[in-house]
Length: 128
Image 1: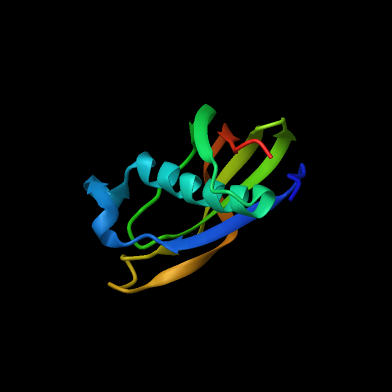
Image 2: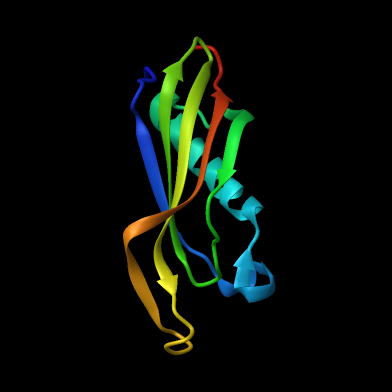
């Protein structure tokens, strides 16, 4: 396998209300960082045949809230390939949002999706 710039992976996840830690049903930012770790793992498997290890974040921007009841899509894309390192760009988008004001199980599709978190980071894989 050869890692290639532009290789990408996406995951979608329903955010259970039990993940809300703050008033107003707000989910902490660490939840999305955990999702970034999951999508980075699959990206390393797809690109290098190994789960790899997350080495560092270079930048993280929390741009909007994530609430219990949201559906979040996270993506990871390789932007640079080194001998063992891979620079990765991450984005988290809310694609569906709960609407408790309309009813306890009401929700709506976000069109367009709401970008809530972006990041860049580095993963490392074993030498080939």
